[in-house]
Image (cartoon, rainbow, N blue to C red; front, side, top):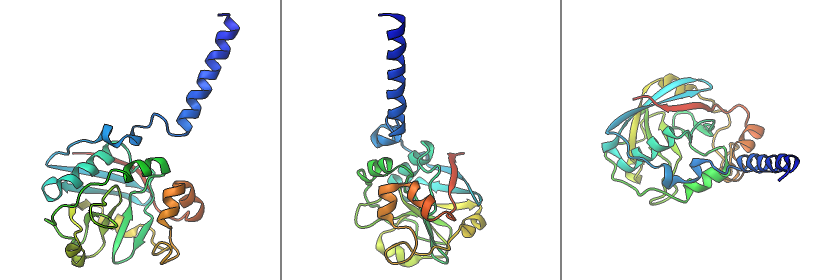
Length: 215
């Protein structure tokens, strides 16, 4: 092969690699089974956000499957750059839909089973959102007040905010409830368009800069 032909081949392969990266190929988050891990008995996750930092302390005994899933998501960067798309003052702060629709779809396909409610939805406690039996995936919410009625509906808390609750309470909630019940972000649109939809239509939403396991 001539030197000029080798140069053309290298250029073509480089373009293909860049094209693949642009469409998410090679992203480990597209393979939930390949990154899933078992969490320690207790651990802490730090969330650096556009409003400040907060820390969540997780107790695996309360919800083993939930704690394992959350540990995996944080450790592998799932929540980085995700928006707090549902902030209802006096109720909850919710997040957990990835900026890349393909990643969201990959995790939606592998829900975790429901678990008994060992720890209820007290103020500052974190729980998975769900749309029916055995439908927990990646969306979570922090209770801004005690929401004991959720206990009877099978919402099992798996951790609590140990630092920075004032940051959680200050997250932007001006858009209110999501569409179609309110004028806030619609989850169907987030699933289909990811962060492009949120940034273009709901620019005031606070977001997670980076989430890490710290203990």
